[in-house]
Image 1 (cartoon, rainbow, N blue to C red):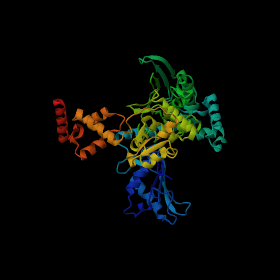
Image 2: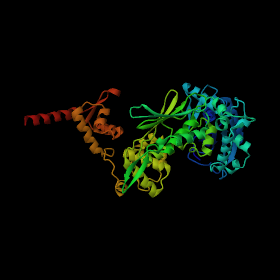
Image 3: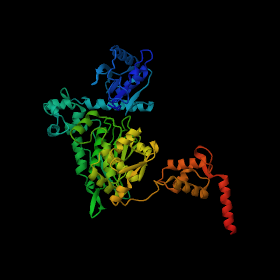
Image 4: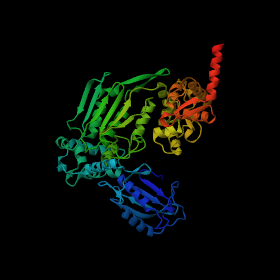
Length: 562
């Protein structure tokens, strides 16, 4: 039981006494859960423990105290504290916080928070409107303001949906055994005698779907090497529900069939220009996370070197381009559930894992996510960075049946020849060393990855012995250069170009070397007096010390005089 998006833990020492307990901290956490997906706060379990001390007992008076203190410090927050007994007999308090789907929760002193991963993040003033808009999106799914009777459902789509639910391996037997009307109610397709907006979107007739604000429209545009339009397909007639739209994108665009062949010993391996699994997941994400209260089409722009997916609206609050692989927030909760239950997308939080795994196993770079003023753009590049990586990852996967995170880590390290623990944490949005070990999994034990150094300076690289066994023909670069050789490169550079800023030194001696490595060696040279630092901040320059410069000048003068 680890802290995360829906669970937080506090040691029993948190409940010191009514006067000294930090109730404002508890109120903040309750607000953050209410504004996200709801959650639980477990009081009486340490952060690094999965259960309380077996002898621990808690007075029931704290339940009313917690309920009272939270209600006095928050608004639009509903909590239910209850005394729980763990399997080992120890007691703890579980504070259940309900998700607030219709309004924004806050503290009585005017502060707003939202749960992001295992932290309660403050909501900034300019983000407050986004939070409110996401709440409206949740209400949108269940609204019946169109007053469309459920008897007006499109018969073919109605029957197909029920058949899909009952055939899905992701739907429990309990749901499958419900009546037709009960299944529609379970997925919030109907409310009373009317179809909800979600119901209209999925099983409504064309004319009713067309009047929704705003039913999805998808445009596919292909451009040549001069970026001139050469093909366009538009699905804007509202005949198709989201599942049918996704299927149309996969089957009606012939470009997904194109691939390149790369040598693999006596054989050749076919690598698609754009893997259909990546396309499906990105388009499904665009449909699921689209803001249905904002006008805008979904664009699929295909260039000669890249694929761009444009989705109207911004990322849900708490998700950023940097943490998109590790953080997932549902904007349209029920629509996302339908997509998952019908097998149209990966489960919450694992869609981008699949995208990363697929692209890295194909020797390609990870997707680039950008957030503009009114849309999110995800770019996937066609180019295979190194064809050897495809063979490396495929052979390792065949031999050891690698897990998804292991494939991602192996692909990243292979692409960059070596990566430090710090660089891995940035690229995968990992917050601690334990997280790096979880992503690497069995790679070190299997002898696929080796490391050197300690803590954040630890560097990971592919085991040379394994590369030799595969006859791996990668490129030689300076990423693993020894410190004494890097030092000589820096001194040689400064002899010619002093004084110089670190960015210029770094660029001249090799961009593949981590700038952090270069800075560490320069600092060491400064400490021993070989190099001096001139200026501050952006004007900082580095030069050889005066004595060394004079010696160099004497050597050059002697060489000239012969």
